Every structure is written in structure tokens, then in C-alpha cells.
Image (cartoon, each protein chain N blue to C red):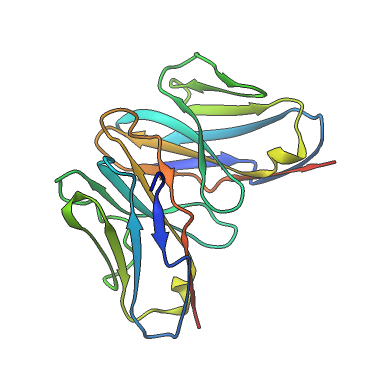
Length: 115
Length: 110
């Protein structure tokens, strides 16, 4: 596809369950970000992948959160033992680091609701 | 700790008004400052600024960066209802992540 694709677009889960959110970045983009946005809030940085470098995980809020990026392309954000405070929109973005690394292309987000 | 602060948090204006949105930042290895517009879901890119004093323009929107005072402004002239959105400022460091501010919610009333 031409843009960043995220799935699922909506996820409702029960407290304590694990969830996986998927991001397909734009082909050829070397940088990939995950952000979290709660209602009426700004974008909270979670994790950043750049090429083959070790990811910057400094924004992950707890050890229940993890992410991986396979083959330098698709990324999966996993939240274990979900809590109600995890409810938010999870946005993925990618960029081509060698050109305009700050120009991020965002997906439509995955809205997570933890009951 | 790096931070990006936007003001005002929210703003309500009438069509035709001019607005100025502010973004101040503190980062250790500045590379660029970016403005994004978020209407419903995905933020969309507006401007990237790397040099002080050089205005970037796109239609009724313009932005400028002051690297000495560590801030940027986004101006919107002759506002329209379609300008209603959250405007996000982000700062990029060399080799590092983009850090976003909390955003300014702009509502343009007809």
C-alpha cells in the first residue's frame, strides 16, 4: 500500500488480556515510531526503530509493553496483561531517515479500549 | 529532560481571524522542528524548520524558527472552519527520536 497501515483499527479487550497491534510502514522507510495518544492529549512517545540499530525503548511505560520489528519492515506492539489505563489510540509512523527523517507518515491508529 | 511546550492549549476564533501558535523547546542536540496538523486520526506534516529566521509558507500558513530563543510560531491568516484541528509541534534530535508537544486545539467558528 501507499501509506502506513495499522491493524486492528479498533480493539476492545478485557483487563488482563494480552493484545497485539500491527504496523506496516511505507516500503523503504527505515525509521518506525510508536506513539500513544489518550483522549485530548498529545502524542506520547513509546519506541523508535531506526534501521538495524538497537531500538530506543525509553518511552515504554512498563515492562508489560514490548515491540519488535521484523526484517526492518512490519512492527508489532504487544501489551501484556492490559490495564484500563492502557486505553488509548496507538499511532505508528514511519519516515525515510536518509532524506527527511522528521517528516513522519502516520497510520490511522489502533484504538484500544480495555474494559 | 528534553521537552516541547506548546501554547495556548486551546483557542477559539472566528473565521477570518489570524492566529499564532507557539512552541518552545529544550533539547540537547537539535536537528529540526516540525509542525503537524491532526484533524481526526493521523497527524499530517505541515512544515520542517532547521534554520533560524527563514519563514516557511504554505498558502495561509507560515512558520518561523528562532534557534537562539528556542521557539517557533505557526501563523494562520484568514482562518477557515477547515483549519479547526489540533496543531502539534515536534522536535527532532540528531540520531534520535521525535518528541511531540501536547498540541494546541484550534476551533474556528463560522
